[in-house]
Image: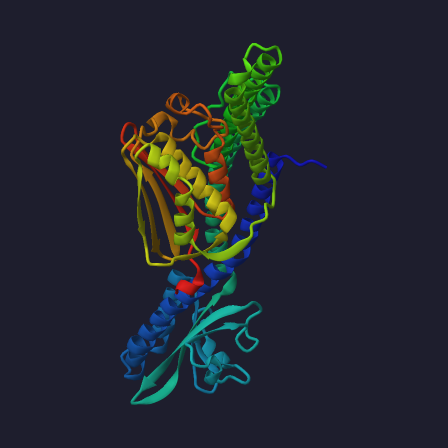
Length: 472
């Protein structure tokens, strides 16, 4: 059965309320009762001590009569609401604030022992069976001439202390109720706000699912709902541009295949129908071969990209000298660079610098980057290739001094079939797939590649590879 978030929140609120009530009913009452009993015991002990230290001394020195002490006990009883005794060491109740002739009645407490108080000045219970209900009993010794002549005992029913604890408990209940009301108001406000945003997300997401992207999803909240809304908005933007990207992709593929196919078809027809004379056929056959090689290269690039687009591309990770690989790759461009008077400046760290990577694919990365550099370098310029090592990473840099990449195109160069206008004007035979392949290869190694370019000044590509352990 589906349970809404609102019901879950209300259920959690009710459980919280019940748990809080139980905790207050037990912990708060017990803690308050103990605190009240301890505080009252301390206060009654001070009264008992004052009585034993002041008035009983006057009695034993014959300054007060027994009747005067009894009258004093009765007045204190009336004022404090407690029962006060003066008891002998053997348990005889000599004076009782609630019994006028206690001395002649000679009430004795069986098994009375002041040691029963332990190390405290108070105890609870029926005080040796004298009371029918439990009392808080506090004592203070009566000493005269360094001898204990008796004890002052003050009794108060525990029921009265429990009443005080219940009064505090009722105050706690009222405070808790006020807190729960405020919390409920905040909870309902949050539920209302959350439900409104969720309904809005559901409504807009349904429109996105039907291909309607005109209405933006605007929820400005710095929480999980806001993050979900931002993710949905980003997804909608990506979906909105997907169709356009597909059209661009098909258009680019069609253009890059149609141009050489048109040339091939035209030149072959011209050769067959005799439009191109026999003495000129070698020239046009070379053009046909060039366009066929261009189609082959484009097909191979598409196949290479398809490998990286699938999950679990296999890498043949081995340890090899990246400096040697750079030098070998540079040699393949010496003829082309000689025609344009371009020189290579190699700044390589150490005679040998070993990395752990797929050598074949890294050779392809270097080839594509150097190929781009030679295409877009100005004549009589240089291409700088550096290798360095830092924090167990090897950094490879390929930098040209050519036309550069416009700022607005620097994020797009990694897209498949992307060619800037400068690129198309500079070189018509590029497929627009080289940098896509480069990025996929580097990312498959869990490494990074970045570009730094200034239009009219040149471009630098920097990528990382894991340094081999044998260098450490």
